[in-house]
Length: 272
Figure 1: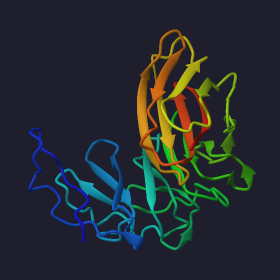
Figure 2: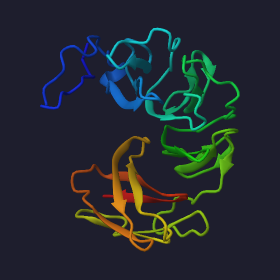
Figure 3: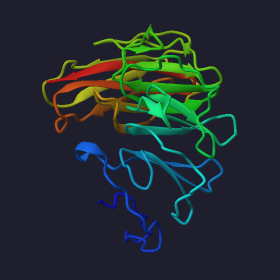
């Protein structure tokens, strides 16, 4: 057993009267809790990860940290990496991760659940994603996805995709490329150098973000689709820049995903 969830008071001390249960790690000693998302309306929290107790990979807690027993069933068969609120106002959530089933029903790396944890069968994803997936954000009826996948429902998508949340069909999105991603319309421009990078910092230059955009969210995912960094950037005259310190990151292939208003871009970063 490993207590992988706690609440910190404003003085930095652990709250002793919030959530007395324990999170049991999943197979192979993997992490317990990977994501905490506030329930729409602010009356609790959704917890996701690779734990098997008190529920399989996902559970719901009230504001006091107590398990909501009315939520869920047998849960997911593998790790939940992200939980984002569905934008309809229904209180539903969309989950992404490495799972392939929810409560015994096929759900390849993405699924939508009701407020009581029932799988939404109207959210038809076909064969879904072919590798672990992280959902970055759900805005304006769309959900942005990143991960190590190369296809969604049989359609090629190299590590980044945008779905319609009403009927989860693919929408146009920039394709991940090893050097420069260039887009127009709803796609921004992102330049990353040096790439590949053996050591030292990596510079990221963003442009064509739109004059009305005030900030942009930049996210970094590893090859398994796990989000390892998110940073909000200030945008001025449609431009922004960032120096990314990568010295402590393992060698491998990473995905950089940009969300700026209605625009998006992505690029593959190679370290080592």
